[in-house]
Image (tube, rainbow, N blue to C red):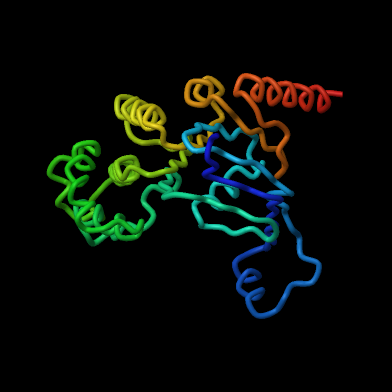
Length: 249
């Protein structure tokens, strides 16, 4: 029997929407009266088994980012339970945790420590990360001298080479030129083939079909469909077409 690696049980999350930063700061001391809210996730339940590659589809504001943030431990639910069994690497905010004053090589270790990796293990994957990032002599230069693309390359290279149990991918990320993007996509495919659990967010239907056997369709924080990718994408497209037709009336 397949072993669950991610479980969401009746998970809900509501965000308070503030007019500006001043209002947000004020709310730290005084609870706002009748605040405007957004229910990012509404009673969401699903199980992902070890080794599955699952697409997460839906329009902007569907709750995809909130769901991924909860899996990576950046956000927490207001209600419900989340169980994540294993180390998570996230291709979301690739440069999070970098020190701009440290070199690329030093940041490999820094990022590794943040992810809870031992010094001895980081040493074994250091050269693989450097080779994948293709930064040349810049690897020993301060990260503040890097372009945004170079920083993202390094972030991607670290996350895909630490051999995680779960890899969370936002395909909307731009990671360099076409050749490097292809290299990144091939690496993700290789990770899937090696039995790593992958969650893949994309607006590109063909990309989701290529990467994932199963997909979950989110709409306004609710799961509309969870099943084989072809089936889920069909429901998603039909739903979008129906909404478009409704707007024209």
